[in-house]
Length: 349
Ligand SMILES: NC(=O)c1ccc[n+]([C@@H]2O[C@H](COP(=O)([O-])OP(=O)(O)OC[C@H]3O[C@@H](n4cnc5c(N)ncnc54)[C@H](O)[C@@H]3O)[C@@H](O)[C@H]2O)c1
Image (cartoon, rainbow, N blue to C red; front, side):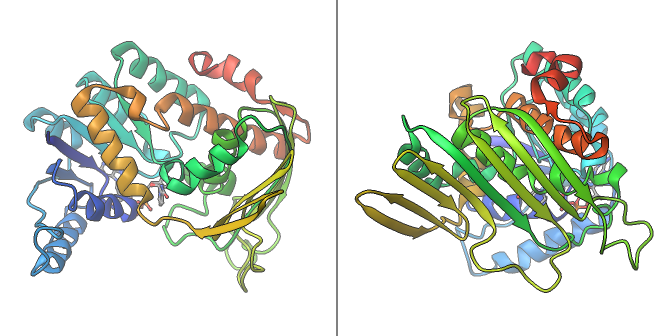
């Protein structure tokens, strides 16, 4: 079983996928497309230098290079596409990939608006395409253990945090390009909570920009966010996140902390599970992305969507929670997630 893959977007995250895929014999990387051809050539050169002496784990990257994805889709006989584009570039690319009836992995967030994500979802469902969204935390073995510990338990409260600095990519600090920290990066914690606790019902958020815009007037995303969430199961949660933690974050703060009936689960730097029988702690596995990509390729080869942990539909639901948070912070009103979905992406309800 091997799957012929093409990449659209070959920046930071695409290169992380590529280094994992080069260790998977079932991954046949046949084409790479980026508007910066030079960047792709440099990346290929670097991968191939690193591969020397590492066979078979570090096999060579031998792929056709394109700067126009339409040409790549026309010329190459692809079986799957990895879409690794900045958040503001989604739309036409997915339409072309769907038109070509190709399964795809798309990096989070799936889009910046629910109306666009809903339109893409309609196309995916119509063609019954296998899709996955880059929420690789779902694929860690720690996640299986956390879910097992919570199975059948009443969850009461959640505290989650994600504080750090602004990522280095040029587009991150612009609201119209990244969608802001909640939509862009903190989406991982929201997605984990959906996977561990279930759907979010209503959010109520407050946010501000007080530090990061001081030296950069173009910095127009919130650098500080606080979001209260109610879950469909009845649990309540608080999620704090921001990009203004320039001098570090207190140990143990970042992560999701879930309090249930006789169980407490934390996924932060480690997995920690406390029950009346005692406390266990173990490190998180580091190969989540390779597991995710390998499951996607198997799902494509066997046409088995049950192997996917985060499909496009689920990615749209996570986007809806984060957009609800953005909307609530701007309007000062609570926002019901299902109302946003019903209005703009009803197929994801
Ligand atoms: N899953 C994760 O943990 C994770 C981690 C980092 C980034 N990401 C996500 O991956 C996405 C990309 O982030 P990144 O850090 O790789 O960004 P990046 O800016 O490093 O790379 C994006 C690439 O897309 C290319 N591009 C833009 N428009 C294009 C087009 N029309 N056709 C072809 N190529 C085009 C750019 O030239 C650039 O090389 C973001 O949505 C981000 O949230 C996910």
